Image (cartoon, rainbow, N blue to C red):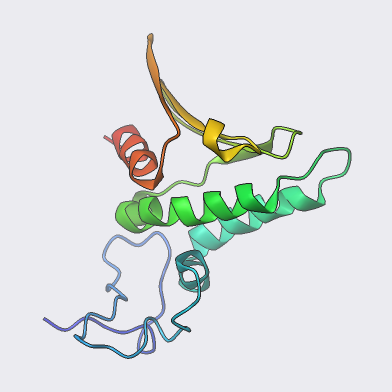
Amino acid sequence: MAYASVQETEYVSNLVNTTPILDMAPNSATSYGAKQDEPEWIKLYSRDKAFAAFVNDLLSLRDEEDEIPPSSDVIDWILESSVLAKKLLAQRWESPRITSDDHGGVRLSWRKGNRELRAVVPANLSARYLYWQEGSEYGGFPNFGSATLYSGLSRMNE
C-alpha cells in the first residue's frame, strides 16, 4: 500500500478521513521533506494546524508581561514530549489550556466532561507530574514522559 507523501498532499486539520501524509517508502532519503536533524515537533508544526496552534500558544507565554516566562528547557521538554500524543491521537488531539506557573514552569490542562488531566512541568524538570481526575477518583504520575501523557489523553477520549 502506498501512502501519499507530504509533497503530494497537505495535512487538513480535523478531517477523520484525511489521507495519511507519512512517507512510508523504505530507505527514504528525507522525512516529510524536512531536514533530518530538525526536532520532530518542528516537522509536525509545519504540517499540522492544531499542533501549530498549540506551539504558538505555548511560545506566547514567553511574551507575557508581569509573569516570569517559562524556561527554554521546559518549553523544549513540552514540545518534544507532546509529539507522540499528537501523532497517535491525530484528530482526537485537543489543545490544552496553557498557563505559566510564574516560576519558570508551565501547566497544561485538559478537561472533558467529569475527566481532567493536568501536566505540571516546573522549571526543575525532574519534579514534573501528571495529575488525573475522573469524578471522585484521582491519581498522579511523578516524572512522567511522553507515553504516559499519551495514555492519559487517550483515556480522556474514551
